[in-house]
Amino acid sequence: MTLLEYVRDCCGDTLAERPFCEADNLAIAQISYLELARCVPALGAGTVSIREAWHRYVETYDRDYIYSLSGVGIPLAPFVLQGMAKSPRFGDARIGGFSRIASDERHEQFAALYVTLSDGTTYVAYRGTDSSFAGWREDLMLSYEVVPAQIDARDYLQRAAKQCAGPLMVGGHSKGGNLAAYAAAYATKDVRSRITDVWCNDSPGFERLVADFGRLQEVAPLTHFFTPAYSVVGGLMEHIATPEVVVSDDVGILQHGMTGWELTGDGALVRAQRVSPEALRIGGLFDKLLKNRDLAGRESYVSDVFGALAATGATTFDELAAMGPAGIESVVSHLSGVDKDSRDTTRDLLFSLLSEMLDSSVSNLVGKPTSAAQTPGDDLSVEEMERHRARKRRAQDRMAPINAVRAVLASDALRNYATLGCGLVVLANAGRTAPVVAYLLVIAVAVYSVFLLARYFTALRRGTDADVEDLLVGVITAVPAIAVLFFRVAVTAVYNLLIAGALLAWGIALLRRLHLTSGTEFLAALKRPLTWNALLAIGFSLVIIADPTDLTHWLLAVTGVYVAAQGIWGLVRQR
Image (cartoon, rainbow, N blue to C red):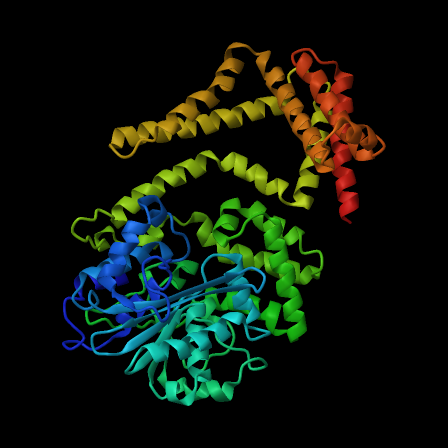
């Protein structure tokens, strides 16, 4: 069974009837991923029952927000809380101390809460890494320094211990497990003496050059370290406990999420034989990039990589994965301060990590639809979330061509090569009355139209959600193909108008870079080559738009030379 099935079907008994188990640890660690600032009191402000926290959560956040959560395993966190709220085992447990810190300046992503159980034990849970670049950057920063989240985790445990009497457990998933081990090791003696267990769920380890392994070894006998067969995060750096490999229903990198880990009926994790070879290969790539550098070299590399990631315009790995291979190439093209071997290894690593995410759907994350745990009066369910996300995926599919162009434009190198290629295509087709590339464009649009229409009518025939936008966009995009079939001259006009539109957009983009706000500033800007470059592009576009069906070959030839020159100049400047 999975975690959702456990909180639905196996939490009918109390802790007095069945002691705290490995699955209980997963459940509490999982709900630490939820944004509960308006649902759970802050540290020092008391507690509420988990049942009350769930009711506040569904009153605070609408259905669209809950169904749109992203990250590996995170979309199911609301349903874990829902199942816990319904169960006798957790419903009356007290939850409090919610704390969250997010700082781009400090590269910190931190959150924590605690749950006091019916037997008087308090579990302090630290949130792990989400899909944000800031969170992953902090993970890699562990390889060369003590990160801000570790200091905050230590301080949080000290303050939480004062709010709770009785034994303590600390734990978390991903980076949260690292924070738990660090906080337990660096806590004061009186707090550490109360700690009975440290739960590290597929968490990164520690670097001996940074952390005091003498202190960490003091909590090693209390530490439970679980990692799935496809372990990437759990394979980073050195651990204080021997890893226990567990079985997961998910595939690839998605195994990092705990909601797919297999459980027995009594809440124990199902053990696996060993870590998969592919996970070891990815771990080797991390080692190649980090372990062979000194601390200053690691810091420099991590700074370069995350600067390149930010240059793509994305802020999370979900957004980067949506860009596809062009997004990864954009990252690599911005690694100007990194040697070629490291750039190639970084490319290989990103492709390996994101390949599963490129093809993943919510069905990979959700698992069995029967795992939805309904609370009376509340119709939120995993099944409905699947439908909601399917509608969003269809909308994203319709935007795929535009997103592909955006990903290319985000990379200087790809943009310059694409500009050079477009110029050569225009130049090669300048002497043709009906350019071959125009027919290829029309065929591509026709295929896109057929894809949307086929998806709509297939859904209609099966009785599933048929998206009317598929029908509308499919009909609209079919118009150019139909026009070409009946009016052959239209293909040349479409081709020429596409060239004109691209040139006009290019010219306007260049003018915007000048930030002109008045006629006087425009006249002064005429002394700059960039201004004349923009005016040339706009001029070419207007001449083409004036009569797209009957252009002289020399005009198209000059246009092709102009576009190709833009690409060549961009590549020269880049070097």
